Image (cartoon, rainbow, N blue to C red; front, side, top):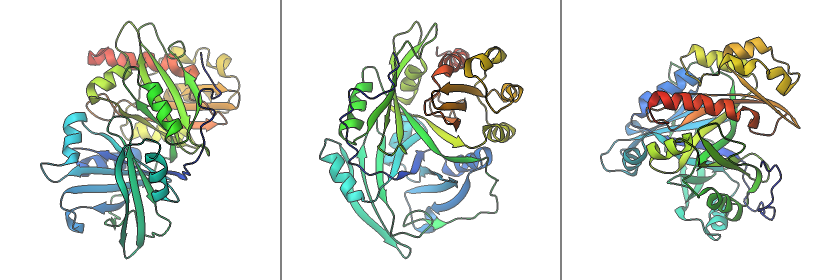
Length: 374
């Protein structure tokens, strides 16, 4: 059954002060081409760069930004590197989820003293624009949380990066901030990582879904949503559940070769405009059958948007006690069926679209069937 109130971890304490998501770093095979894709398709602006021209000889990184969303697209310039090890094992994917903190040294101490595996001890990096303190820990799979303290820095991103304003800067599509990031973990591992976020990072469980909530005739999964105290950081954790066929979580685990970030949910204030722009730029979304809209008004009640327009753009709608939300999911961004993007607009709702789970998962199953991986 759905659990809306935290139970097992109500004693979790918000000892780790987090101000928001600083950036998400994605390791890819070709950073220049991937950055061009995110600029062209999703309307990100290129704001900073590090590579051979800046004295960095082992990697290239493009920093892309749209409102409060910052992506770092990185690839290796050398044969033997941790970046290439990640690519060989997982393909293109999210490596670092960086969190903005007032004190990176304290964040490292608080989390490692509670059992987090250290990734990077606190270090100070600086240039003429000031200094930044960073530290980091490992989480599920090989995903890293990097703590970034940047109050004393005025540069375009981090020391070692230079500002970048190329002539080609496509207009944005209305994306505002990262609403949540979803992690997929293997069989029986969800509660392990829920406990990690509760005990190591002071998060609380705000909602859970079991296989009765998230299932179709063929596949199922379970999910618990962890949030920090101010609600700016929300991490749903998914694991597979028994079903007749292979679920999307199993497919992800198989192709990613382990746990990792499944998708980024990016918020917009006008989902119709955003989806219109994304579709016009070639972004492909999961297909929603027209029958989904037959009883939509009865299920969600009165909403501001025109139902026919939502049907045209295949946008999903769900309601909770606080209001409603609109959402739509892209197809996988990579050749491997792993990472994708969710576009979400909240009209008061604080939930995650439970009423859309069946339609969403059936759409994913149709994609899996085409791939021969169901």
